[in-house]
Amino acid sequence: MICPTCGRTDAAYIPARRVWQYKTRHPKAQFSIKVGTIFEDSPIGLDKWLLAMWMVANCKNGVSSWEMHRTIGVTQKT
Image (cartoon, rainbow, N blue to C red; front, side, top):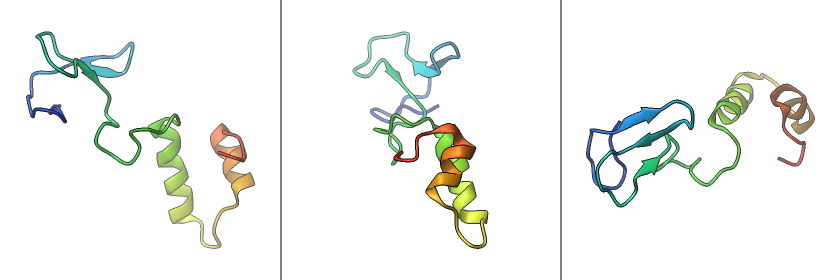
């Protein structure tokens, strides 16, 4: 994984927290896979975002917010 801040490539993955971390001194010691994307500030997980995008792209007549609510397991307001 490449650091979004400085470009270093020696990060280690921590599966328990699902983040990448540097062992040495670094301004941003931990970062997730969402850093630098449009999903960075979203509290919704990337797995739910990808499922929602797949539903929108593959439904011929569109998809309702109620159907997404039931399928993905988020509130309708989300």
